[in-house]
Length: 357
Image (cartoon, rainbow, N blue to C red):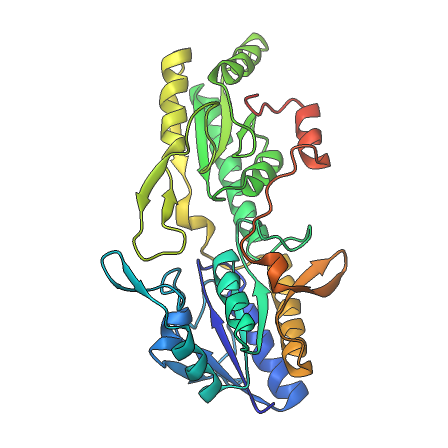
C-alpha cells in the first residue's frame, strides 16, 4: 500500500480531528505511506476534491472540534440527488475516483456513512470504517462512540447551571437534548446532572406520571423540577415532534420541538411557570473531552492498522478494554437504543428519577 484515503461523513462530532491526526501519524510514521483526505464526505469524492495530509497539516488539531476535512449528511453516491425528488446511482463513478487516488479508504461516520461504506465494500472497494456519533447509537457492541462523552458532559454542565435558576425562581425547566431515536445523551446527562424527570424515545411518557412526580416534590417543599427530554421522546400514543424535513438526505427527518411542547403542557397542567432550553448544535461543538481524544486516537490507529493489513469490510469497535474489528454488515442499517432493563436505567429509577411511565 502506498496511499491511504480518509473522509468524514454525517454530522460533526468532537474527536473527528483526533481520528484524522491518528490516521496520518500512524500511516506515515509506522508504515511510510501517504494519506489523502477527501473534502466534505462523499460529495468531495464525486467532485474529486482532496488534499494531501502531512504531519504538519494535522499538527495542533487534537483539541479542536469539528473536522478539518469538512462533512455532509447528504450526497449518498448510491442515491445522489440530481433534481427535486430525483436521484441517480453514482457509486461506480465514486469507486473509480477513489481507486484512482488511493489504495484503500477509511470512512469515519455514523450509521448513514457506514452503510454507504458497507455498500461500497460489497462492490469490491477496500474500505475500513471508524464509528462516530454523539448519539452513541451505533450497533457496535456496548462501546461508547467518540463524541458522546463530550456531548453528554456539556449537557450535564447545562443542567448544573439550570438547577440554580430553576430553584431560585421555583420553576420547571425543561432541557431538550439531541440523540435522534435513542436516549443515551438524555439518560447519561440526566443522571449526572441531577434531573428529576428524564424522557427518552424508548419509554413513551404520560403527563399524568410526570405531574405525579412534580406534585410529590412539592409535598417535600421542593418547588422546582428539572426535566431532560431527548429530541425523539414522545407521549404514549403520540408521535415524535419533527422540526423539518431535509430533501436529498439519507435521514431526512430533523427532530426538534418536544422540549417546548413538554414545557407548555406542564405549565398548563400544573400552573407552575415553565421554561425550556434547547442545546441543539452546542452539543456537537467545542473541544473533545480527554476520553474522546483518547478513544478517537485509538480508533484512528486501529483503522489504519486494519487497512494496511488488508482487513477490509470491517469497522473498529471498543470491546471492553480492547479494540476489535466488527464486520460492516453488523453496523450498517442499525442503531443501538437504551436498554430499558439495563443497570443504568434501573439505578436511575431507584434514586427516584421519573421516566414518565
